Length: 364
Image (cartoon, rainbow, N blue to C red; front, side, top):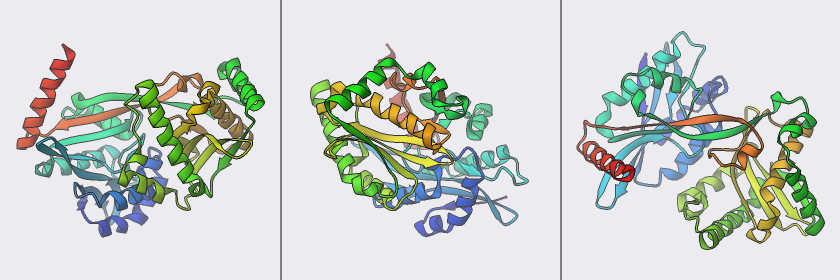
């Protein structure tokens, strides 16, 4: 097996055909690991001088059989900095992509990826591979690894609604649709009047509206709720540019919208649809309508819409153990992180000690 480390944007693009072939035939791959998503992200974030490519491609008998979409970021903390190797992009699930039908075992391919990283560990101080699905081949390999098992930690839950478990909406609603959800729908319709819309091919037309609403909600949560943990890609130069570019003429982007009778945006949930899985990525609401519990309204509308239109098999509510998500389902995917400091570099040793001391202090 031949391994190659891709470090240039041109080499990255040349992987397009092989990458897209692998992603369509690898059931572990979500939209966040597709060539499209990674390519758009890199073409923006390559302009950050802190970032450099480190994609690992594995070739067997003249054919690409595996790709690990990685990059190295220089992270600055006050007067110190370290180099972190991570998955390209930002999303709820990440992983490696490989051909499960080739004559090389998946565990062999995964072992080769880590071998390449270990042979080049002078290039980074930390391995931080986040949002790895618990039922993926990558998780299976890491859990078997004597070297990496202890560094593989729980991150969060991703609630999912599997439509195949319920024959129709009536069967589903008996278990999950509360009377309060129906009341909020009736109240909003009676007192405000609203329309539920599905925006797909022209999502970019509503982009500025959802950006402004997300910023408005974020400011409301900080000022009035003291919730300073809420962050947004829209508030960063590269983040906003990445999402804008991703949304242009992209049929995989779908935004569900609640509007008042005059067409003013009340709430949105913007999602990615790939392989019959709808990934809820970002949502926000107009703070002036907070008492109407717009989240319940839009979720019920989305659930009902799909029972009528069969657009997706899985509704993925995204990363986060929020009670409101589990009002709609009792199924979930678990995400894990692999976090390993490199003891072979000076900065890896220093930051490992600093982080361990910080953990001990916080746990006292």
